[in-house]
Image (cartoon, rainbow, N blue to C red):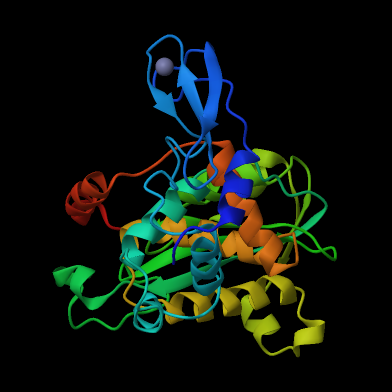
Length: 306
Ligand SMILES: [Zn+2]
């Protein structure tokens, strides 16, 4: 999809007061390019740049509208393969664009600290056959098998409350790993509603939480509106649906998929505002991923799958 005049208006909304190539603040505006995008000149290094320089939009092969469509697509339950088939005009392969999105979203959950009454639980998600430990072949995959990736989910119980989604690790959660996943996101002394999973004790102790622990076998039998973990259960259900929609995804990107899902599940409510928020983040914190680096990175990540 070709760039349009509205693209220039979007990009020009981000005035640059620093050279993205040498970091000098000695910059001046110097006209517009053919698309109407502001040009700048750097008085220190002599190079020219635009608001797009150093961002994921740098190559500008995909219009802002194209980014909107792509983001709306991946924030749904549609697979990348399906999107590639549907959008034949796209000059870029979706996996590369997706990697750029994950880079933009990286760190987006870092500052989230939940307060008040919080529900927490783990979700086990199956590792694809090719990545399973051969030593485990033939054994039945119980809930805590090493063939499952364990995801930590926590959410504020109040209406419109925030939620976080973190990779806890493969197999049975340990106290240390539970602390690493949950502790940065829970305020000291809050009220934690959870099942009697052992690893939670370390989290409760570490942060002096008020623990409301339920027997998971008992609450399984309760109807949804009486289940004390109703909200986190709902998020588990939606996350599984979302991940299944993108089945076969590279597990080294698990954190990126969870960042994306957190955007879907957290305010703002409106999907277009969510997309606008992601694009704003891409322009406000310039960073990009070059095509060559993307493929090099993919090669080296094979060994570090979660
Ligand atoms: Zn410069």
